[in-house]
Length: 91
Image (cartoon, rainbow, N blue to C red; front, top):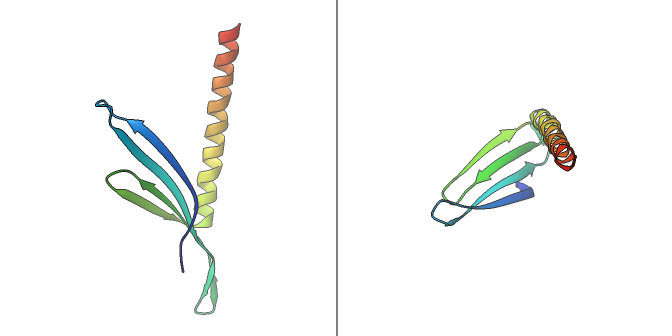
């Protein structure tokens, strides 16, 4: 079964010497399938790539949902903190 790239978030940054580097977070998936007559979950792969190497973690749909719920919660909290800082800055 082929992996499908769902999303790739690229982040460029410069080191202390001013050289540019590229990091990327890629979300890939493999569809659910039937193996030996039994349905099997699909797989979600989170792949982190940089200019030198790459690492990947394979997740079940349940694990990916747990991570996405946590990311959503933390992201909302950080955005709220920034809004609060702007409000106190403007006062």
